[in-house]
Amino acid sequence: MNSIQRIRLDLESCVGKRVKLRANRGRKKIVEAEGVIENTYPKIFVVKLDESHSLDRLSYTYADVLTKTVEVTVDDCIIGEYSAANE
Image: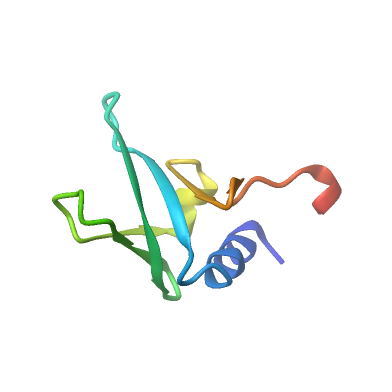
């Protein structure tokens, strides 16, 4: 199983759970948000944000998580962080 498949399975198992997002939008612009993983699709996942944000939903690719452009934290565990022991 490759890394993207593992990230997708991890996110699929977290559908409906609260998550914290930290996304690097470039040019030193970091977006931090909290919400619930609403759904997962073959190439993307969708997070429904809390009411405190101007946007309703954000979607990212699994590759964004792999390349650390987006950091998804569920229950104090960062999705996509694996040690060599887990391989």
